[in-house]
Each structure stands twice: as structure tokens, then as C-alpha cells.
Length: 379
Image 1 (tube, rainbow, N blue to C red):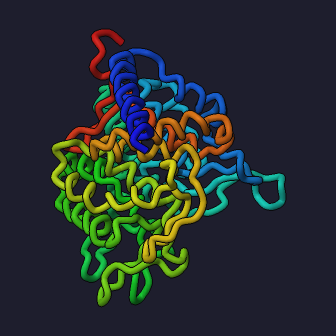
Image 2: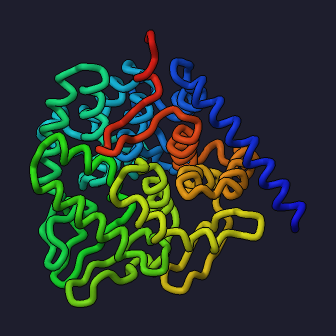
């Protein structure tokens, strides 16, 4: 065992040297992972395609994330194609007026293509607004900022609900999640970085209240230190495990650890959030693999997760200073690259976690995006 830990420590030291070197080189170099994602998942007209589903679907989340990656890569041409496709196909031609539909693809008749569910997805809308806001700032393009302002106003109007006992809260969608006695919430939709940036940009106290309720969901909704995919807010009981999904944490919840790990060191909630979720590391397999499913009430686990989960934990363990765990996740990530190649969501998680770990971008204390290319002498 002693030799095993010595090996991990050596791997960790080598890993940190590699990451530091990668970060130093990343400023102006192309981002190979982004180029691979573009060629594998994005059509020529800017549609992100999930090939794992028979309907060859596109989700608004994928469009928003891809726009973030394009901005991180300083790839304005791709950003504009993604934005145009989203506007024309998910927002009925006007993103300033219409929140994007969350699901588009091949209809059941197998012939026609179009919107399959017109409901919006709040996390996609927030990240889309954030991508536009930061594109306006970083590329000095006012039209992006104007569009962001319109989208932010629509989010506030349709996706922020004043929940009894919790206050103004981001609900998962305009329809279907708020009931007479309770609301279903998704903790992974509540990344603090874009909320802080939107609040600072607008100066609207509403967004400070939304950030505060999001903080409560993240802290109080994980009493055992494990994030759930969904959670229920009941004013008389507080946060309780979600009945519909049986209190599991999995493919949604993984993003909670990802967003927390990427908080700036000066973020006022970073320390408390890292401490709250520290127990999740004790649920990994003997060789350090994260589980696919966790029962948030009992802590029971099932399955070994894909490489994207390991990528998502890289920022989390780095922020905790647990470099042995960083080394383990990096090794798992490298081993599983080929087997996960067709899994759209896994590749998205790899871009988020791997890009941050390689120094491609970071988030400032005010939530602003700091891409590596912004520090280049020439572009």
C-alpha cells in the first residue's frame, strides 16, 4: 500500500507539471479537444448532434455549451453558426423574444425534423445568456450583449419563481416543475459563476436573491455531502430527495462538483461548498473510479462512471488540494478515451473539466470568463 501511494504521489507530481506546462502553452495554441468535438458532433450549419439517440437529437444545453467552448477557443465563426442555428430552429427565429425549445430532432414518423418539446431548459438559457454576455465583452461586440440582456430579461420573467420559504429561485423550466405544495429543482442548473456575472452586469437585486437561493439549494440540499440529480423543496420540510428519480445523483449531479471545483479562490462560498461535498470522495471505488449512481439518502452506489465523470472531478479535487485524486482521475480519463468516443455528454464533460485543468480558461471571482487567449500578446 505504501508503494502504491508513493506511485500515486509521483504521478500527481508529474501530472501537475504537465498541467502547468499545458496551461503555459495554451494561450494562443489551437484547442485539439474542441476541434475534435466540432468534427464529431457539430454539423456545418451549427447544430450539436447527439448520435446516441434514434431521433438524432439536439438539446439547447448542447448549443449553449458549444457556444461556451467556441468562446473559450476564440472561435468566433463557430460561435456565430451555433447562435444562428439556435435562433432559427429553437427560438422561432428570434432569440430576443423566445426562450429556446430544449429538444429538437427527428419526429416519430421518421421523416420530418423539428422541435420535439417546446418547453425551455433553464440551465441552457443561463449558459447561453452568459456566453453572449461574455462574447460581447471579450470580442468587443455590442450586439451579443444586447441579445444577452434580452435573454436575461426573459429568464427572469419565465424561469424565476418566488418560492415560499426560499425566495426568487431558478426553476428548471417555465412549465412542469412547480406544484401546489412543492417544487422540483435541479442543483446542477445552479452554477454560481454565471449567476454572479449576470447579477453584476444587470445590477438587479433579483439576481442577488437568485444567487442566494441557489447557494441554499447547493448547501442545504446535500445534507450527506452528495448531490442529487433532482431535489424537492417543500416549505414545511425543507429539501428532501426527489420522489420521481428516487433520490439518485448521477448524470445531472456530476455537474455540481464540476461547477464548484471551478469557483475562483476568492469566491465567498467556495470553501463552504468544497467542504460540504467533500464526502463524495469516500464513495469512489477502490481504484478511485467515481460511481455512476449514488443514492443521496443512503450513500449506496452503483456502477462505475465514464471518463467524463473523472474529467468533472479534476477541478473539484484540484481545488481541495487532493492531487493524488487528481492523478487517479487523469489516469482513468486517459484509459477510457476510446470507449466513450460516441457519448456526446461524456465529451462535453471532458471539454469542461479537461479544458479548465489544462489552463484553457478559468472563472474570475465576479463570475467573469477568463479564457487563456485573452492574455495573448497577439491574436
